[in-house]
Image 1: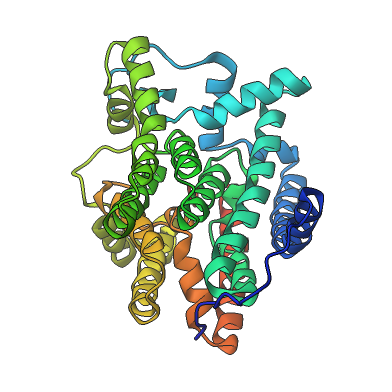
Image 2: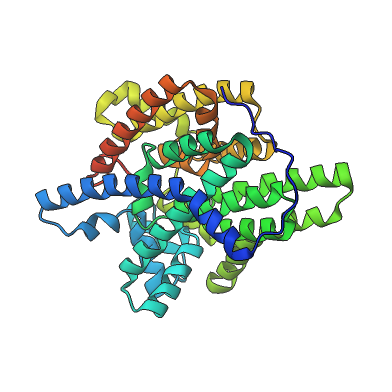
Length: 383
């Protein structure tokens, strides 16, 4: 088990900004190397599948939710929720705006196609996420655990999504920036990063909770009124998006209605139990439910470690809020992809297990990543 890294007593030296940037870049090299290695594995697998089925590689990089983000970047949002339920009622109002906005900006600046712009944005966001995870964990546990945590995140079962036009890279990059800023009492920066995160994805709104906890803690201990800026700014992303939808469609609830009619039908809070039921009913034939049930069992094990290690409170409340989203959803449940948004969970595993167990976990996780990457090219698993 790892213990938090203790700050050492050093003499204050003024370092030129250029040297600071160079030192940070060099220190971030392990994170970028891990990210590059994981992307090479995923892209190699997708390229093999594409070759076998005579498809272009891009065909597998822009499927599933990628289609909706690309559509928003290209055409903007629909003006209303479709009638009916299920596939025929799906519209792009069910997706948040930051990723397609960055895709449109990239398209305008570079002249790349919208799918290529999406790939560029998500690749760079994933690299930023790797660096962010490494520095956030290093801040508390040191270099070794930071490297292990980054490996676990980017070789996790659902890590194929970092190579799709998905929002996970942006969410993790902005959430780690928020956590680092909160730790340093950079309240405006924390609130701004959190606001951008809440414009990425509904689950990313979990970042509001650590902003509230940190602000209250700073106010209670130091009467630092500036800390409330973090909490005040954090919901701005989702607030601006819902205001836009109100103006654009005539209803502030368009996102919720689009999700309920197109994807999230069913009683709230049943997703976890439904996945477990499907495993007992269909066994290995239902890959989605099998992956969700395995993720649920892994989460239970991580919670045991969590109670022993007592990581930073901001990490704990953020991960708990992410898991709550999964429990409340009628369909998502505790999925491998959801756990990526709750990335502090991986840091707990990195800090709490022995080297031998870590190797076993990484091996199994990498095999699961390879399996789900191939499954994502079919209808067997929905990333």
